[in-house]
Image (tube, rainbow, N blue to C red; front, side, top):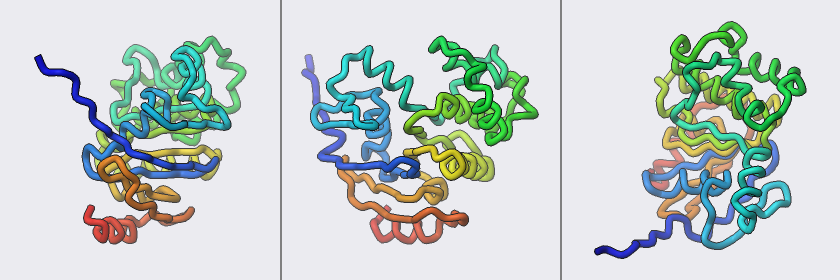
Length: 234
């Protein structure tokens, strides 16, 4: 029988994300983008090092404590929408509050703000099968934003969307950053999606190869970023 094979996915990654910053992580397939995102969200535990979210090092925490902190501090958006098909858009958005035993009415103002920002007012009573792919992803983003997480982690959120819908979703993520002050870390292979970020971190073979500052901009053309990526051979 074959023994276990240990693969070092990330190597000495040193990364700081400031409050309210929008950071994109890019790199070739298998470079460690999703693994880094899972570690940032407390889904995976690094074999060494520290991971601090608002002064709390989550690495030494028990699984229960890490779960509670993840529920309080992090929001997740994935390529798959992960909506409950029998619930309305509104019910899907508020589901994390119900699971956590939090009164929904305590979040009434933020709920209205998030549903409006994500342009879901007209479809909040619709079930997922009555929504377009873009609307379903906007529900997923609203669900992640509602508890006011310290950091929103988005893993290829435009992966199941066409080009135009993907841009619309990225615009809404950007607005959640600029209007709500939401901190976002995005893992993507799409330069157009990454162009919405303030900074792009390039991972290659588990190592941060380069960081490309883009700054906070109203216009999100991917041209300058694509030129930088081509220079790096990506």
